[in-house]
Length: 141
Length: 141
DNA sequence: CACAATTAAATTTTACACAATTTAATTGTG
DNA sequence: CACAATTAAATTGTGTAAAATTTAATTGTG
Image 1 (cartoon, rainbow over the protein chains, first blue to last red):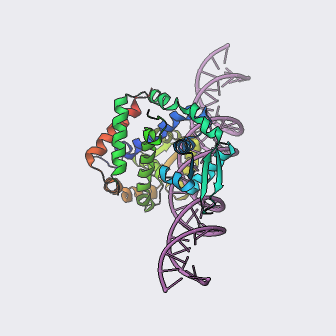
Image 2: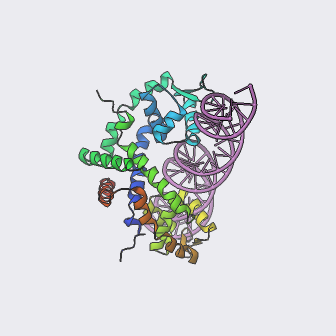
Image 3: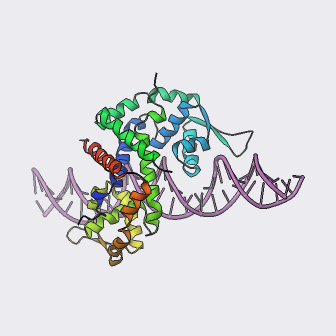
């Protein structure tokens, strides 16, 4: 009789732990450039596309305005982004990288490599993990 | 020239998304029994062992007192647990299931099965994901 | 054109999560 | 025994997350 409610029987608990562990590994690396993990995600999105609406950023990261509005205000305080209301549609807020924000990308270049090293796992395992996770993410309607 | 800082190149972003998605799938199921996901984890640990110290629970779930103290006070308000100082060591707080807390396990029995269905993924994929994640979790020193 | 419906952010509330500090109790060593 | 070091929780502060509500602007239909 195996108890399906045993913590080590749970399928989701390891993923919850891994997600927290990964963010903990990022923390010292991101701390060096003054970002938190969610802030880093926003910056990644902006480094790919200099100026985007709050809505667009939210869709790419699955975050809503309740999370993004204060986060973006913190990035603005750090002078990494500028927030401006769209003139075509006053409801829309455009987030644009400052020069400082764009230049921060240089300091972030080493992070992916440092993370692979910090995780102490083979590229093969990382790759199959990523593919499996993406497959499962896509399996939802 | 692939840009290692592209969001879809990141290995950790899919895991971050999956962890959030899983908690989102749990939410309606756990809402039915009045728990959040971290509260559910604490209850899982207590259903396996009726009475444990805050410290023990924290080690099992990788959560510190800053998170657990208020969470456990909420479980106490719901009359699912009792918090008592140990008489042998006054620094230690014992968390004990109430009758109500123990009985809640019956209402939770169906959740693992409902989750597998909600995730809409084959058992094979879930199993290999879990094993890979555990392997990676263990690969740290 | 009017006005209901929709949309985009912001705000509010509740609840983690973690770092750092504080408080109180216990333990180890001289 | 004394007292520094350690340990366990609690507290404080900062920063996500998500649900629900609010505000303001825009769009669609009669």
